[in-house]
Image (cartoon, rainbow, N blue to C red):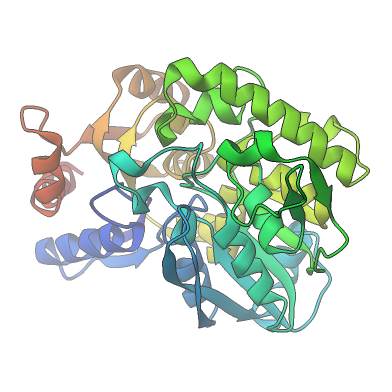
Length: 391
């Protein structure tokens, strides 16, 4: 049997690559006759740069930057030769370039997972370190930048990143605010873009379609999970509105881009970068599909295994495992989705739309969450063996 294991991460327990490797190991303990192909999924968050760079034979460039709270952090930039990317992939990204592509992962420097619960506060977090990464790329002779923006801890519209790239935010006394975050925005009196450094075209991998403002915008939709108290949403939204107006005026752009799909992703960093550079969003799953040849792998498989940490109604809006099911349905392939926990409403909706599908939870709801994290290998392996014996 030809089996494809294409899993997204189980947040706080297993990376996408780890869970794919675990699935392959479990399958081989059952039968060494099965042919197993593994393709880790990424939504632009943790693991994005590593997975994409390794898949195309790239290398890594280490760099020291600031994390979202201004602490020193060592991260890596992926470097890929353009000749290793096929024409279809470059056309999809709207790129006609030569040389190297830099792959950057926002979560590696300002990721929510890098902060403790007590440190999560979008009033204080900044994308300054992302700007430092982009600045480093400018010295590496790259023809383009691919930026994954999943899993961020910030809600600053890329103001911090722009600061690191040369935009000067100063107060009424002319003092430059060196590490701007939303808490310091009321102090901003002048914005100067004269020293903004040039960058090659930026492509932003993102599956989130939220606009910048409103009930489905960056602040209301994602602020609370980044540590913003619910009673401060309106106050933060007011500051985002004012700063977005300031940025648009400074770059001589209209406010229309606040309504664009994806402008509210990752705290609006795409909005800020789009004002300053040739920055475009590309659908994250489609990028992954073309990067790894995922559709052909699904077509050639007899059984597809996929899953993530939690499968709920948000999974139905373009997340990797759901897209795996959608593509597999075109070829009438059997899919088993394993998730740490599942929401029944999402299961019902998915099964009403697709057939030849099993969705199961491998977590133990009677145990504390941390114990489920600690025993994830045990629980996943047991559930996968059970499902394989039934199919």
